[in-house]
Image (cartoon, rainbow, N blue to C red; front, side, top):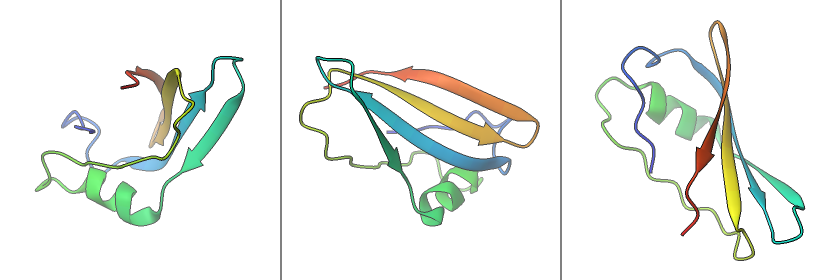
Length: 77
C-alpha cells in the first residue's frame, strides 16, 4: 500500500521496489506507468500494488520525482 505526501503528488517519474532474500540477493520489481499515474493522481488516496516475492525478507522502494530521488524501507509481511 502506498500513500503519497501531497508535496510529491504529480511529480513522481519512476518507481522500483527492490526485495532482498535471506542471502541479501536483490530482485528489482518495476511498475507499469498506470501505477505511477495513480500515485500522481490527487484524487487517489491509497494505491495498492501486489508483488510476488515469496522469499523476500526485506525491501526498499526507490522512487524518482521531479527534483530528486528517495529510498524508503518497506515492511515485508
